Structure formats: C-alpha cells, structure tokens
Length: 335
Image (cartoon, rainbow, N blue to C red; front, side, top):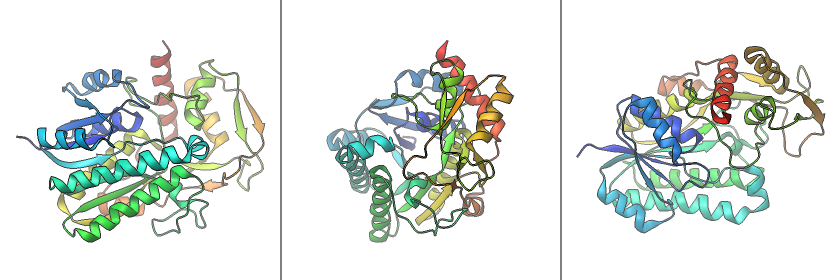
C-alpha cells in the first residue's frame, strides 16, 4: 500500500492549501477534520484544483479509538498536525476549552503515532509563542512567553514534541512558527472563511470592502512606527503551504527536532495593507482609528534565515499578491 501523509485539520484555511500543495508535490494525503471551524464543501474544491480524489475522514483527533482505527486502515508515513482551536480572544474567555482540546489532541496524536511506528511530524505552531518580542526581526532563539491561552497551548505542544524527540532519537519533528498567513489560492476556490465575525486584519478588510461591515477599526495610530500603526509580517498562504512541503521533505531525510519560523521577513503596517488593498482591487475600505488593544505590540516580524538555510524555502509572493488573491476569494465566496 502506498504510504501517505496524515493531515489533521486539513479542511481548514491553512489545511486546505497545504493539502493542495502536498497533492501537487506527489504525496498521497489523508485528511481528518471535525469541521469545527471548516466545511466539508472545501474537499470538492480541493479536488477541482488538483484533479485528484481527496480522502477525508470526519474525526476529532482527541478520539483515541477512531485515530487508532485510521492508523490501522491506511498506511501513514508522516503527519502534519494543524487541528486545534485558534481564536485568541475565545481562548482568553474560555481557557480550559483550549487547554483541553489543543493539548489533548497533540498528546493523543503523538501516542498513536508511536504505537504505529510513525515518527515524522510537522507541527503547526505560531509566532504567538514569542509573546512581546524583545528583538525584531525575531529569530527562533528568541525568548518565548505567551500572552494568551492559545499561545500557551502552542508552546506546551512544542515542548511535548521536543520531549518525544529526546526520548525517541529516531523521531523527526519540525515545529513551524507561522507569522500572519493571508491571501487565498489564486483560483479563488479556497480561502479563509471565519466561522465567527472576523478579527484578523485581512478578512476584516475583505468584509468591509464587500459591504458586509460599515468600516474597519484600526486599533492605535500612535505606535513608534512610520505611520503610527502596527507592523506585522504577512505571508501568502501559498508560500506557507509550500513551506510545509519543504519541511516534510526535510523531515523524511533527517531525525531530531527543528524549530523554524515561516514568515516573509518583511513587515507592513495596517495602513500599508489598506492602501495596497484599495489600489490593486480598485475598492474603498473606510476605516476609523480606535484605542490600542491590550497586548498588541508595535512591530512583529520574522527572521526567516533558518527556513532558507535548512528547507531551501523563501516567501516569494508580494503584498499586492496577498491583497489581490484575498479579494478574489471574497468575491467568489459572497456570490
């Protein structure tokens, strides 16, 4: 039987793009998703993009019995673990929900992987583990410390995985710390569909431009940045997906653990993004300045050198590409 990649959370925003990238790279992909923050409709769209049937099982990764059965039924060589709750605000309001689900999912997956001799793992982590960065651009060696429960579940999951690698020297794990994934597949068939009102900048801008919201709130214009608004490292979702393929190839050839940033290494302010979005899409995005949000930092940007050195990966798409593809997806979704 042909060995494949198990992709947890593969029907979500990031997962669907990673699935496309893996299939296009020649991997056999098995998706598991409980559709808590996604829809099974995306599977048909992945098939339309790739021309390849998509294998997906509705499953919660915390369900040990179902997970074991899956590992018995299909031949899995490696795992990309994306499944988990991801809303920062919700994690603050309901921390136990996040600790219970996200940590248990990682623990259960590691346990079942070891039971079945599967020792290649790519983990979806986050730049939130850096908390309020002391150094910018942020290297992987920077101090960690989170400001919300979501971030802590990522950092605790990282520690679990690192400990497994110590206990099992033949285990290979790549911990990918994402910065700000945005955009959509250039086909307009898959993209970000928040199940709750958008709070991240790009879906918020798209919602305002589409007339679903009256205006965009910019939280603070008095930061020590050129235009006073916060600067972030945005990475096109297609570049992020390509980073997973590169990480998988590396994991299959190496053992041990690596922590790697996936970011563009280039920061853009909120106003940079708004003005670029308006220009490339010929739309108007009304906005209003509001007070700073607690915990927000002035600048957060990746040092991406390690990804280029180890994975031979580098972000290739521009801010106009991100804006253009995000808007194309919004127009497709709202028709």
